[in-house]
Image (tube, rainbow, N blue to C red; front, side):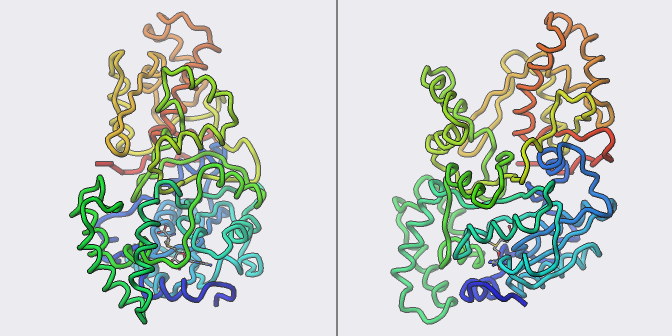
Length: 442
Ligand SMILES: C[S@@+](CC[C@H](N)C(=O)[O-])C[C@H]1O[C@@H](n2cnc3c(N)ncnc32)[C@H](O)[C@@H]1O
């Protein structure tokens, strides 16, 4: 039983488990939660060396209705790793359990409890902790993060998501409005009913409606009460900008490994954290490039203006990302969608390929000819030692006249973009293959 928690927050998620999920849908699809793709966790958090075997333990803290726990357990079931699900809301846990039952998943341990009690619960230590959309709902998110840091292994990794302040200005304006209007309502259900009435009256120039498809916006809120409550009626909700995330991690003894592409509701692509996406070709970019990385990323966030959430990996130690210049690394396509995109990238002319990010922002990726040849050699089995030998002998690469170091520099530069776009990740040749996730993005 949870001991330390906010009773109003528990009541909210007991009455409105989030996100809304129907266990029957487990028969037809799996939700691939972005941070939990094992190929990504391995690449970013374990330098490609994790086997996810019988000793591997993952914690999903604030697991809600189960997306991350189910997806992790599904991927781990044949490898032997286990998942611990923890949440304050018993009704949320029941939905997650019903989903696991439909899937016959037996590798999840279910704990009704609070993150703040974790250090005393005797469940630790964990290799990987997911905590997405939870810590910003604690009275003291600093303490919440320290509790997670206390139960992750020294060589473990965390996948976290917190709200982005700038990208949620419209949400906070609407929360304030709803606080005024629903102040006298005795129950959350009555506040929900009133909020629905008000939402349908919001004019097109209202901050929540501006620039959005009105019908789609209203549908997401009116037809999905847990979403409406979570977004607009929350009583405990804060957000972070990039610089604050670095400070927050630091106070818990953690380091930011890398921001992650996070394509869920309001998702963000990692490329959006790079000021070059907006300032390429301007002399000011040279000056920005000399600033510390967190400041560069904060500038990118400010220019972007719409990052409503930040998904990222964190760890206690540095250098957890797999490196392409390690000859023992085996490149893998992360998803079936990635295979398609890489096929097009490999065949692209000098104009490259335009990738569409949120709000129809176009990013043009012009891979170097050596990268294009590299993409054709990825088979999920060959390591970089083998791939480099074959690459050097390919006419398109030989024509570039690059020595080994120059060739690797070109590949490394492009590989960072391939990883940011969730196309290719690395595993060490001694770690078992992970396979390609069947996933397509519209
Ligand atoms: C917005 S939901 C996110 C659910 C899930 N992580 C996801 O991404 O789908 C927040 C969840 O955190 C849980 N929660 C809030 N405070 C908590 C605490 N102190 N300990 C454990 N769970 C908590 C809530 O019950 C709720 O299920």
